[in-house]
Image 1 (cartoon, rainbow, N blue to C red):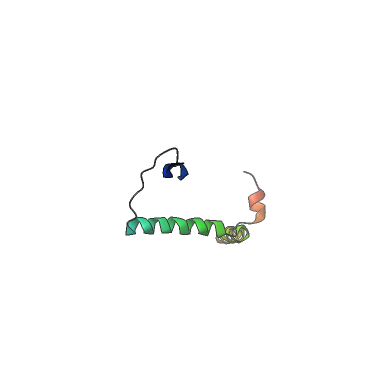
Image 2 (image 1 turned 90 degrees about the horizontal axis):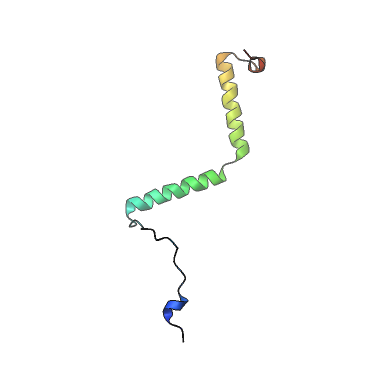
Amino acid sequence: MHSARSHRHPTSSHATRQEPLTDRRFEDLLQQANAFFAQAERDPEAVRQEIIAEIVDTMKRYGLTVEDLRTTR
């Protein structure tokens, strides 16, 4: 007959000390989870379009053309 101990799942090979789950800790973990999911849901094409728009705005602001970008000095 096996003891109850033999049916337990093994614990991690390295023991970590867990912080108590205070309201502040919970909020921190929630913010981290939200940031993780926001990054995962990010649309690469939308990001690309935002960057292109920023470049175009900067070029207009400084009066630059594509030819100016191709010129090496």
